[in-house]
Amino acid sequence: MSVKKVLRMGEPLLLQKAAPITLFDTLELHQLIQDMEDTMLAMSGAGIAAPQIGVSLQVVIFGQKELKNHNPRYPDADSVPYTVLLNPELTPLSDELEEGWEGCLSVPGMRGIVPRYARMKYKGYDQYGNAIERLVSGFHARVVQHECDHLNGVLYPMRITDLRNFGFTDVIFAGQDIQDD
Image (cartoon, rainbow, N blue to C red; front, side, top):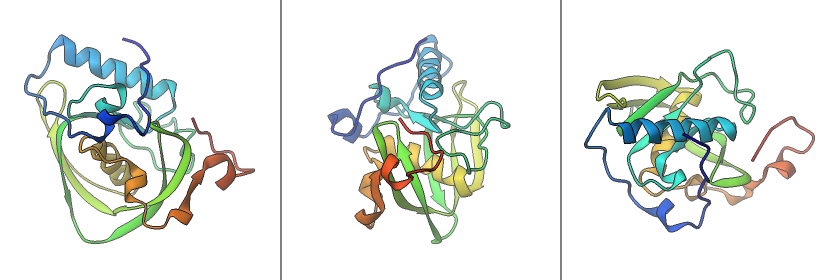
C-alpha cells in the first residue's frame, strides 16, 4: 500500500469506461482500495476513482473516516462519510441542478463551476460485496457524481457550461485560504 501517481487530464485511460468488479473481498481489491485511500489522503482529495491511479475498474472512494476533519481543499463543504463504492449506479431524484466549484486530482491547480443533480440515489457494493444504497444531496451528491464520472471517462471540465467559470485556483481564489494540488 502506497501513494500512487495520479494520472492527469490528457492520459487516454482517463477517457475510457472502466470495467465492473466481478470478484469481491480479494487481496488485490483490498490493496487497490488501500492505495487509493493513501493517495487520496496524501493529496487532500475529497474522493478518488481507480482510473485516476491507472486501474480501469469501477471502484471509487470518497469522504472522510473522521467526520470532524474537514477537507482543506473544500473548507466550507459538509462532511461526507467515508465510502468505498464498487459498480455504482446513480439515479437523479429530480431534474434540479446545483452549480458548485469543483477541482480534481487529475486536473491539478484548476477549479470550475459544474452543474450537478442536487439530489441523488446511488447504489452499488462495498469491497466485501455488501449492497450499498443511499439518498444524498448537497456536497455528498456532488462528490459521488464527480467520482463516478471518472468510471465513464468523464472529467469535470467536460461538464462546465460556461468556461468563464474555469481557471487556476490561485487566481480565482486569490487571497483566500483554499488549498489545491
